[in-house]
Image (tube, rainbow, N blue to C red; front, side):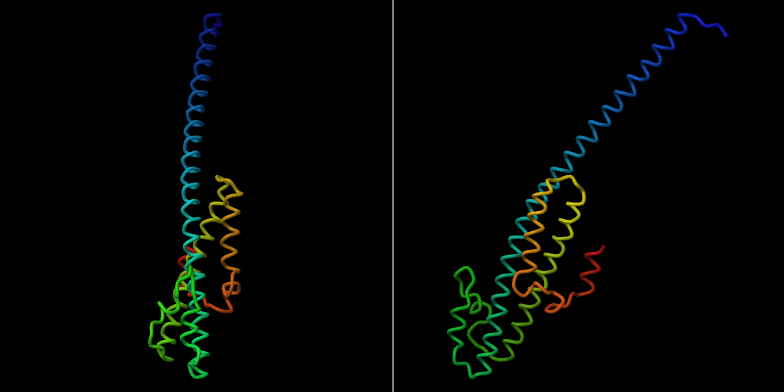
Length: 188
């Protein structure tokens, strides 16, 4: 085996060329990964903004429906006592300065109508709770990704937990039974 200076220089040039190509390809990969990471982060931030809007809508709906539910309970009690305060209850139960109970129930109040309306409002409350649970799972997944500002995600989680602890929603298992099909969809 003959070793020459030209052979050593050519080998060194070849090795340097390969190193430069490796560095360039790694640099491109790093730039691609960085660009993908930024794109994913931007999508997550956009989704967090959407979640905040959805959360406000759900909180508003949940509060409104809980107020209606409490009003229906008051009407049922009043009906059992002879319907002396029906008009007063219908006029006093408000949300955003609107007579929501009157709008929801109408003029004719009977035990059957109240039972039907109570079922309906509890179903809507259950739907709001299910939507909150889905948002909570999604926000927890975003938090686990470590690609966003954890303070913003923590604020959203606090808002969701606050909605759950608000009023009757605090002990879901005591008030509303979770539908197994809804839970299965959330797990998937």
